[in-house]
Length: 161
Image (cartoon, rainbow, N blue to C red; front, side):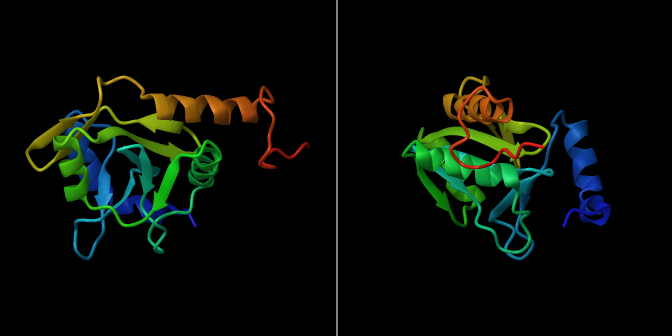
């Protein structure tokens, strides 16, 4: 469950990130401090070599409704989707090899929030050309179209009230 206490520990890191010009913090696991968990109050996705990867739910990651929607839509488009542990080193290596295509967060308020830059330690990764990537754009538009009744809801997400 989301509670204000869930976010109290993030205040210092968030303030530090804001001072450096960033809007969110990418959280790593608390044990090994190398596996990605989520970003800010959103779930996170990486498109690496045409595979859409999101951290698996492990009890510390919020099972977001928008996360589920992203996974369902991507699978319906025959995109390879993996829910698994993903390390920051894997992301760095994918960027260095040119296989990192997109990073984006998903959440109720923003729906899809693309990441244009990622800083880890002293390394700064520029993701794509800084604009919204094709996968993030397609997901955002598809979710919004379903929400607003402009596309068929084949998933049973919309409940008339």
